[in-house]
Length: 235
Image (cartoon, rainbow, N blue to C red; front, side, top):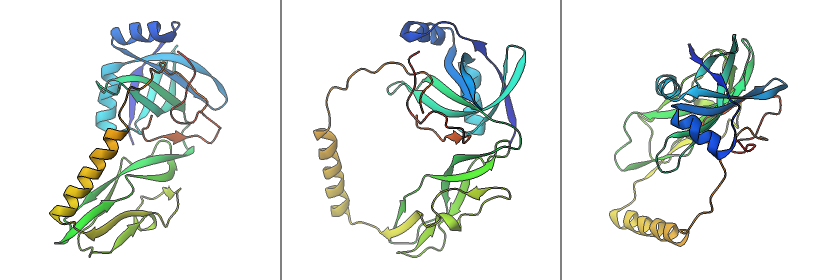
């Protein structure tokens, strides 16, 4: 896994106003923490970070240049605007070379489903333990030759050397079902639309988030009690 070098700047402005000014300047508010250190509030060039994500995925290993030093870090949480999709805030967790961490790696299905079959992918990411500098970018799982009723479990996914399964090995990754009829499909679609309609309504405004006690992107866990996903302290 290659490292992507990116230059960061310290941040001294916080709150919604400070975050908006940071974004207008083409940067993304972020917090860097881990290994027992105090959180450091920084900003990253928006374009450079987006390019790193597109090239290396959500588990991109960043070499962050800040205050004359380089820090290795992984994205822990990436918060995006629900409408525009633009990045609002990033939680970054510090890692060390040779350190083994737990991350969620995307699972991609390949091959063609058997005639009359329907693909039910129950696991989109696989939780694995790997060295911070050697995290797999993704796993390919072939459904070629799977008959209706067959399944592939987490333990059956091929892992590269040095990578270990961290979740339940019996978890179903993909299951081949009997393809629904047109009538069944339309009925299920109508039911889903009805459920979405019943849950519609105004949503309360939420504060911009910063570092936290604890988005959902593939997440790294250094094992040092870092922030949980999706929570943070005010900017």
